[in-house]
Image (cartoon, rainbow, N blue to C red; front, side):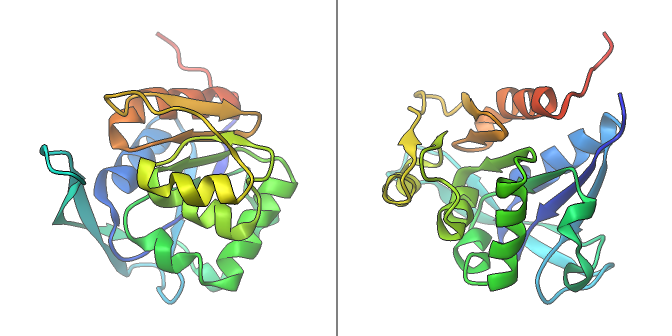
Amino acid sequence: MSAKRILMLVGDYVEDYEAMVPYQMLLMVGHQVDTVCPGKKPGEVVRTAIHDFEGDQTYSEKRGHNFAITADFDAVEPRSYDALVLPGGRSPEYLRLNDRVLEIVRHFAHARKPIASVCHGQQILAAAGVLSGRTCMAYPAVKPEVIRAGALWCEVNATYSNACVDGNLVTAAAWPGHPEWIRKFLQVLGTKIEP
């Protein structure tokens, strides 16, 4: 396997598991992952939020960990990356207002590079205008945005544990889907894991 260079876009109150777990898993299999956030420099952190499913009508939210920024957002050159990861949480709702974030996402979409997006990360994809004609899933509360952006909705199962692949795009509804979402993303990346 050749190591890939992967960009992860995060912001304050990114969902804890949706940033931490893919970051660690991608490093574990030998890829390089650069985490960036508008307005933050390497060595700084974003605060995370832990979203949980506790029987309420929507997820609950608690303060999570600090997640380290490893690269300079302003210096990001999308052409030098092989893939993109968009975690969910609350950060996508304001990251999608950043024109440079949208330009970066459009680069990966138009170049057909692998994109893994989970939960509310698809809000950024919708805002970037790259979902038209694509099949994807997201956290169900994001379904109206995804459909209005022209995507075909892939049904989320009752345990939020499934994922959807449409060419270079790998999506999931929430962190319970990590095993399938990350496995499918690794397949799209061409990553082979030895038993």
